Length: 356
Image (cartoon, rainbow, N blue to C red):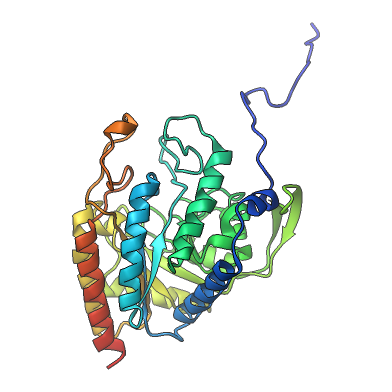
């Protein structure tokens, strides 16, 4: 019996929507000369922090994910005022996270599903992302995000000052190669199990020249060759066995980075497994980290805090008119007043430990 074959590709593809090319989207929502200069200066400041040339503490702070632009605009306005006040001791960068990795399924972030209803209007999501990043930059706030899809950077990387490679993707060759070509500093999180090897190996790979499949500014498939990214740091976020922000854990991280001749730059994620996934424990984690800074832990260059206008999180999906204002729909956050107190305390500690 002869099997008649009519089609062998795209058998499980149900839809395909053409995206604007990166250059088209950047032309539609351009970055001003002032915005570009600010991004460039922020990246230079971050380079100095990662390489120990700046004694300030980097703090990447903000919502777990961006889902409601109105509340995030209000957050950014408050953030800008506090950043200006504390700028001599803290370098504040706002989390502007548009992509969310899921363990199984769920809302994958504003780029993938900007209407929060499963319609997945990605072209509109990319437009919203570029637009909001521009608003944040105009407030004088450096921007940070996690880069999950390797195509996304071509659309928004000109608006990013710092980027993260998450715990689920630090071991991914695709993401390590992508990081090697990114124009901004990058933090690699330790794996969800808690071991450092995947992140340290990711940093090694990202600092080297890589060649891989990518896309051009015109949206064409291409073979991309990078020069390597020298501005990588290690993010300790805890693991299945518990937290990993103790002095012993930090020294292990510093030693592992030193061994591979990478910058001995460590960021402590005060959320996720380090807080036992309890957002209200983030200030406790931060205080213990600040204690290490007081005791001379010079390799702790940065902290990360998940924060929003209001604390906690809310279940999602649900009808949009039932969503609480300024409350995360993904991981739980601390509220603004707690955030402000944490950052003021951090500035005081850094001032005494590193500037007195």
